[in-house]
Image (cartoon, rainbow, N blue to C red; front, top):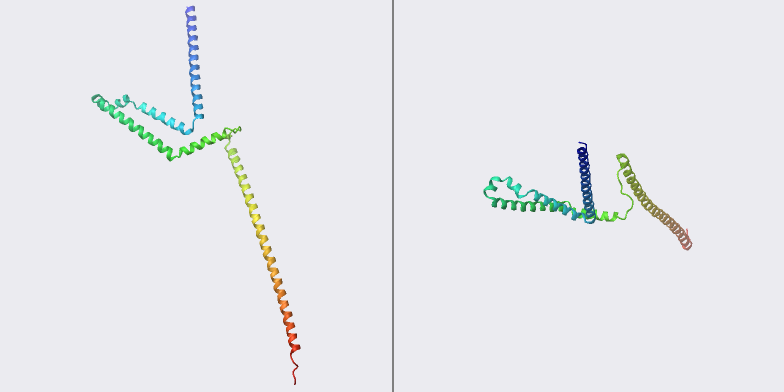
Length: 219
């Protein structure tokens, strides 16, 4: 009995070791596949990856709609006329592929995915040279919102300062023009007053000259 129990225990240990080895191999293969998928996604543009995923999804859909499953739901017809059922299945698969491909094309066109995915590729390419970690939420919504608002208000404050400087320059230029206009008006008034005084003096001299030249009246 003891020898039998020992043999049983040794077999169970060996089986456990084999199962652990299988699990390790499976997990290592899965991680390797994930790493390969990540590497391929990093090397290929997003648009090509999107199209590849759609192709695989369409292929999975076509494989799921195989002839056996199709004929299962049409058993009376498939038994009576299998050739017609096969032709119907081929036509169904062809129309299904065309419809899905058209829908995928509409999604790409309406959502402008080509441009947007290319922009994401460019952003990823530009971010490769940046060593600083990307921003991540802290988990406190108030803190994240406040940090965004502070940066926004700082930008607004800088913008208002620039606008204030521009307005101050314009105001100073207008003040100089107004001052120059006032000085011009004052100078013009002075010249007019001087001309009037000269005219009055000339008139008085003319009157005196006329009086000296006129003969005295005889009574």
